[in-house]
Image (cartoon, rainbow, N blue to C red):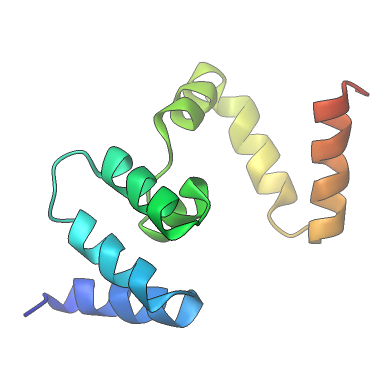
Length: 101
């Protein structure tokens, strides 16, 4: 029914959260514009669209354009925070969002 790669991704998604999200994500992989499909599915499921896109190995167009505007800077930021605890990352997010930089 599914190719081995899809079966693996379905298994991963099922274990990561909602089995319905896994099924919908798998079905969305068969359609043209995956971002629109996954965003709509996330809304229907009451899930965060960025989370569902990430689970499918995608990022939204708005995030892509921000990263592509300053690729070296964002690469450095992402690599720097990858091993930080969530609390430290959230502190950085709050500082940036509140304009305290």
